[in-house]
Image 1 (cartoon, rainbow, N blue to C red):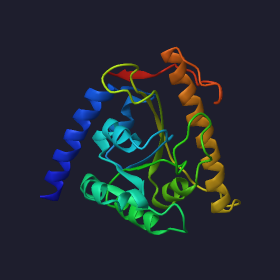
Image 2: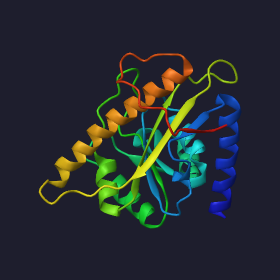
Image 3: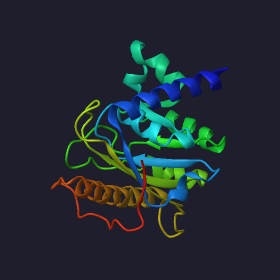
Length: 224
């Protein structure tokens, strides 16, 4: 019964998201969503609406997404977030419960959506936290980098633009400590996603001068 209710809720939210924000989605590799294996999606964080937007775009993988514990515990949102499928994380303390919960979900075949910045940003992205890299290395799940740009303007104005990257595996070299490796992966992922953002801005005719140079737009397909 829970799965049925969850499916209905996700379907309703997805319909609302596509009507309101008309997301234009591009895939570096369109086959990335075809795998039966769980994936760990990571994305830049611009708004509290990001979880619903990106999870809706990734609906084929039905990802659970990380949400700040203070939002998860709000009476007006808590029930919805639990049914939809999310994992609370305490941003103020040394929280490891989110990692254990996500590990169990991945091992059960469920994909995860993480915003490694930990909080929203405008312009320059916040440093990426390495938790996603530790999770991927521990479970063997592949990582998929995602980027999105554009304001949340309902029905009118610019469309939300999203780019979904290719999947890659992580394996820590024996000569490097896992904590150091995870931080290196997080820093590189931030630069990759910054470049993806620039490519999206270029396609929309806008520039975000706070980020790095754009990636090549070759081999990118569009999901309209």
